[in-house]
Image (cartoon, rainbow, N blue to C red; front, top):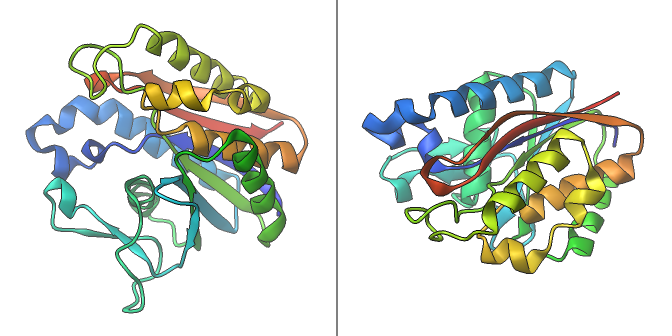
Length: 239
């Protein structure tokens, strides 16, 4: 599989304006950055978009599957790609938000989706990334969904943890440098303690890029921690 580009986005439900309601303007900058990252992904002229995010287990989804925003107060399904009665409401939150972002772009490119278990080992994530590179046909762009630590302050979901800022700075540096080895070096135990939902998907990205080979450059366009959760938006492109 020629991996032509990758983008990293977070997956908070509040990125959907109708879910956020009156608070929607608070994440306007994040939406703008995420939309721009998806646009850069499409500018690499892929033939298919592969969405990757954390889920309860490692699994693949069909083109007609969809996710739902009902758990977050909005009666809306989010299609992965094709509307078909054979599809099921099975996408985890990460892929639901990823599908929402891609659909928002207006592209009609085919979409695939894979979930990686949130507790998958770094070696398992790297192997999955290499598998993704080897199994698909055509030019593929990878959209990776994942949040950083959720322990940035006493009002954060994980309360305050003094280790969180350094962890997130390390992730930001790895994304900015397209540093696959640094991402693969993220500690699963510390990541779980900091409630960093992106650890496994980022390590799959690292495994995919390592398997694809070549030189890559990274660019981080958003790195903030609204609501006590670190969000990153980044693009990786071939040099």
